[in-house]
Every structure is written in structure tokens, then in C-alpha cells.
Image (cartoon, rainbow, N blue to C red; front, side):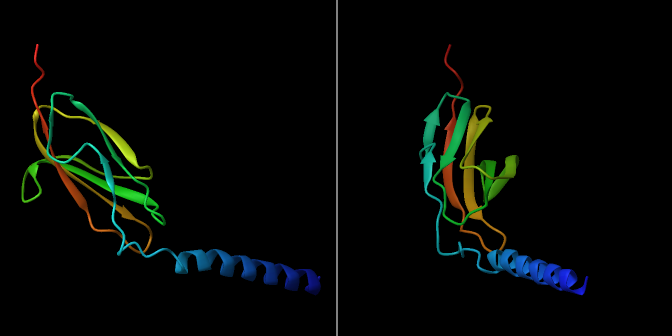
Length: 125
């Protein structure tokens, strides 16, 4: 019985060390940046449903996506502030001027935000 208990203790200790090491050796994202794919910076469009899309950052577990109006230095409306685990997000926006930003993060670090502007025009009839 003592031998089984000793073996169990060694196995549990080994597994704890293995899984803890992945937390200790997490990728440092502070020197990385998020490359935005769409929408392009300063886009003016009458398309109200926009897909915010960026490239995956190696070592990132999540992405913070924020959309405000009119901009981050003068926020009158927060349209979205969310954390997602993918590299795109679809959002319906009323006509107006928006700024949006995204950053990658994991359990121990984050990139700087990459910011863009976007104008949604009224739809022409």
C-alpha cells in the first residue's frame, strides 16, 4: 500500500510540475503587435454590419476589442468592450464616427492596442 501511495504521489507531483511550467513559460506578448486586416483605417462606408478582423498573434489566448464613438480621447458612447478568443468579430453599427482598437493578451502579458477609425454613413435609398 505504501508503494502505491508513493507512486501516486510521484505521478501527481510530476503532473503538477508539467502543467505549472506552461504557465511560467508563457509567451511574452509585450514586444508583439496585432496586425489588423479589416476594416481598413479611416474607412467610410454605408455597410452597417462590419467584421473586425486581425491576424493571430503567436502566444495570444484572447483579444480585447473595443469600439467607441467618436474616439478614445473623447468617448461619448462605448459600443463594444469585449474579450474574445478568436481573430474576428462581427458587429452592427448605426451611422456615425467610430474608433476601434484591439490587443492580444495571455495570462501574463499583452500587446499594445492597435487603433483604427471608421465612419458608417447613412444608407442611400
